[in-house]
Length: 226
Ligand code: DX5
Ligand code: ZN
Image 1 (cartoon, rainbow, N blue to C red):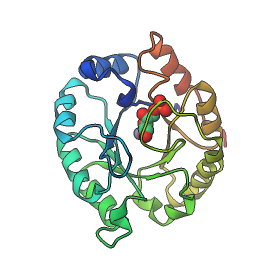
Image 2: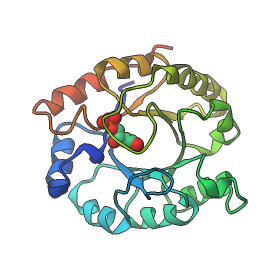
Image 3: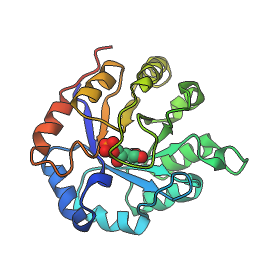
């Protein structure tokens, strides 16, 4: 099956976001990946629900919203109202560790609101952390850089984690999409595909490139053979 490609808006020209989304859609993108950062969970700030709501009118492509924030339990609903189709939440968000919220409850809430739910793992977090939650996930996102910034180098040490999630999903969640994010290009995406990933987020590799369509086609053609 063809892999899916989710260009990350973080690398787009923020003064022309509507044009950039259109360009990604015309080039063959499957999702638009939207990185939400709150300046607490990661040391960077990006955008909020009002901007996502405005961008919703620019494309029919699903919005893949990656919440790098302390309180996904509060804001997941706000982003779904704004037009998010997929919402991924970090297992490391502090609200899941101080008794404020529970991962299954937030995953259920996302699904009940009509979006697809996913969990994200930072590089230091082992695959075992999310295995109990796999049946509640439409997607798992494995970070292949430390979240917070685009343009970082891919971490090959994440490859066994991709394989571990892939193998666990065979029985626990056969329809699971396995997404990778950070330092993705032709070479690193091929490695991820070989370990079981089928959704490629790419920022620097795709935006600002004259041959974006050819780059997306090459990523589409990388398949998991495991
Ligand atoms: C980083 C974000 C990524 C980022 C990837 O925290 O989650 O989506 O945009 O950027 P590249 O593809 O440039 O590594
Ligand atoms: Zn991301």
